[in-house]
Structures are given as structure tokens and as C-alpha cells.
Image (cartoon, rainbow, N blue to C red; front, side):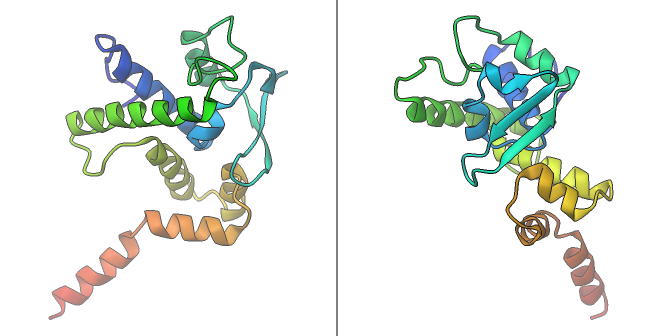
Amino acid sequence: LKSMDLSSNKMYSFARDMFLFSFYTRGMAFVDMAFLRKKDLNKGTLSYRRKKTGQLLFIKWEPCMQEIVDRYFDAESPYLLPLIKKAGVKERNQYINGMHQINKYLGKIGEDMNIPIPLTLYVARHTWASVAKSKNIPLSVICEGMGHDSETTTRIYLTSLDTTPVDRANHLILNSL
């Protein structure tokens, strides 16, 4: 996805970049991305309060994040990303409409890539958690990175993502018949 040449289609390129930004920021939820303000980025750290839980999170700013922000920089906007075009005007509607549009384009990209599940912004969040788990990152770190309230939430989340152990068990059982 990252290396695809989408330069001929601005909407595909934008959708991919928002997916990657979410992944780069530890699976940041789209609502939180939409409401990031430029002032939330200070001295190499992005800080924001999760809309869902109210938890304050801090993310070390990386060059890959800056590349995306630079690509869409709007000097007039208070927002870091161009997801809310008119500050103070039905912002919730703007972010919801933007999410639907981005998910529509991600779905088309996913089909082009023959990805077996619908590609959405939420998949970026799942992907970060799955990659972290595959790298043997401790559950407590994944929990903190995603801004979950508890490790139980993270455990449920990760269990819902990876059915491989159960699939292997089922395969063994079926082969024994």
C-alpha cells in the first residue's frame, strides 16, 4: 500500500495517506486525526486527548508523519490534516463525510490489491495492533499505545484480530477425522 503509485488519482492517494497516518500514529482513530490541531504538535511530540476515552496520549513525531502533513499543509487551517475544511461549521458532519469518502476509496484500493477484507481506516488501527503483537511487543505497551482503558480491552481487541491459533486447532481436529 505504501509503495503503490497513486499519483494519477488524488483521492486514492489522499485515502492511502490518511490510512498510513493512522498506522504511523499507533492506529490513531479517525475522529482523533480529524480534530488534531497544529498546536498539538510541539517540540517533536504530538499530544492529543482521545475523543472516546478522554485519555491524553503523546506520540513521538516521526519523519513519515511529517511527510504526510507537509503534503496537505494549509496555512489558513488550525487543523493538522485537511479533514475538516471549515473550522466551526458542522465539524462533526465534515469528519463523518470525510471518513465515508476515504473508506470508499480505501475499499477500491483494497479491491485493486486483492485484499480479502474491506480496507478501511479502522483496518489501520487493527494493523498497528497486529504488527505490534507479531513483534512480541508486550500487551501493556500495545494497550498504552492505542489509548485503551485497560489491558482487557486490548486483549479482546487482539483476540478478535488473530484467529490463527483457533484456525490451526480446527485444522488439526478436522484432519484427525
